[in-house]
Image (cartoon, rainbow, N blue to C red; front, side, top):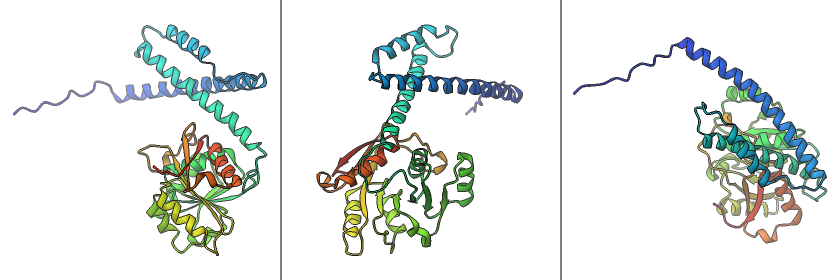
Length: 301
């Protein structure tokens, strides 16, 4: 039996290095263009809002796509349709970001009654710190920079966590131990049901605390916590959460502040029609401040 080997690449290391340098330069120039486009798009959005015009105009975007297709170079390594698809993705991303920022300003200025005053500093405790909960932190921190965040969980690499903080340029988040849990006012359960239960064994949430999970939002978990908070010595508010996010990523190192933009965030409770008004307004505001669309349901999954 003969064994064949693939021919080694003729590209030398200096050539690879040169290409990386050129790509880095293009990325720098592209970033400047994207920043300029974002500024122009947001200016246009504010003008449309002032004149009661819709942000999204399908006919205008179709004209833009047609124009872009006609400008694609014949020498481009990508086909016209491929470049058109790439440009469409960029336009849609800008539109989602524009919509989120418009909605966020409206939500932050809302006079709707909620369980807490979102304009004041609060302390949030995150149980577990994986991809979802770290992305949630970044999104909330963008909207609520006065809030403080604490992380409690097992097997979190402290050195990796500190490097991540430095890389992301954030300071209002720290690792804590179990003795410091009661300093929290808002508690977010970021792991699976079993992991969440193991972390809060023998822990009683403070009076008037707000608690929700983003790991599973299954009815077993919802029932467990709602029964617990109905005990005489408990008086916190719990709602199950189920963001419609599907990803194979698990580490906080990949956290993405825009992960929830435009996604559905299901609030799970046995009787959604009987949720108290201020409670619903509070949890809806959480979802909207991370760019998600809140939906109330009695079915998890």
